[in-house]
Length: 504
Image (cartoon, rainbow, N blue to C red; front, side):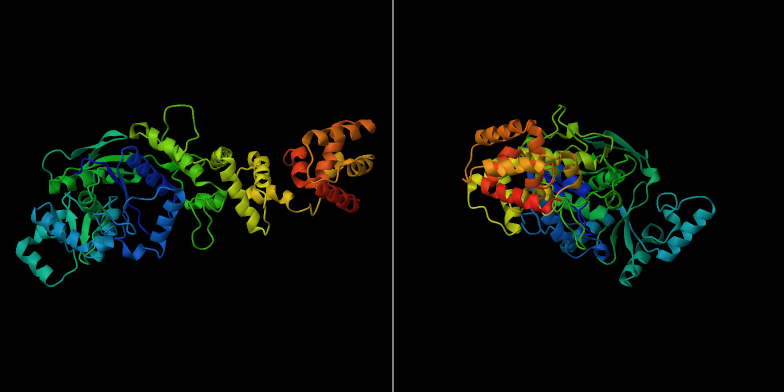
């Protein structure tokens, strides 16, 4: 085993990458970067029947968007390839023969029909059929058949699987498994089945390929989801069977539904209207990217689903997460997924963007709607006005549009609230008093508005409300004086005149 830190994210390409898988990838990435190690992407495609076209490409695209790309992968190979299990068949065959020869694994020739018959017979008696120490000597396998008959079946190309001898009634069945998150985990091997490791079609099962690959790729730490905890005893026993030093294992807590009851699934997102994938998947299923989330925000809220640094702070950059991450701070209990809190995380990260970065986001949206801002200062001014109002980037144009298009309609509730008997004459006074220059100071605007209000015997608010409605279309929006200055007085005058004709 290598002295340096090497971790891996090993998804199966059976569909889009779920947000729970992204968190596993993130924790592996953080651990690798914290310890100056390597982050490896391995595609575990042993189950060819369930593999989905483009799933592997999708996984790599997700990691790229999030900014947690692997150091080694199928597309960026290192010295430990191939990085797809379907391309490593010869490797597995060599090791499965070694395991059978040692007597710690055996050939099983039972047909699917015979095993189903055993299951039904057990169910009739209120029991569960498990292929293990309790009944393996009554079944159709090499332990019963002996060497000669086994060889005959193999020579005749009789379909088989190779099973692992999980426990053979010698010594205690309790197996103590160390885990970096949970401490010692005691597993009773008597209750486990003799797992299938290899099939006659030349493909290993996940469990066998997983252990062999982790050893050969010199993986130092296996950081994976809690659902793999029941397999820990099997994996450690396989390491022992080969005489290999196992990696350190850490099993992450489940990500729970927003209700806190049960594991988060895609159906929860469909039902409650929030994404569960990083980027868009086939069939128009949107991800966090399309829903207006920044990748930094997604990484932030995922990091806190099962970990914290022990302090009060909740907002972290990726660099801060790397420096603070510690497996000892990973929780045991499941973490509740909160879609509304996730929006808050995104809002905080939007506010942390520099003026130049946020301006670039705005400019991309502006240009996508067919407009061009030639003046960088004006673009920055617009960006600074709307930045405090943005939660999701999908809301950018909703805030930007007022700078490029006149209102097509006016909010009726707002009009009822602010439109009084003197409103029209007040607005005509604004048209008369506003200078025609494109540049005007904030102080000049404020003084002009105060004078109009005072001359009419009204408060400044009586003017500012309707003025905002005719310029924006509603009572919401950025600072009105900054808005007028940015739009220019000529444009403001045109909007007032257009509104006075439109509003009856």
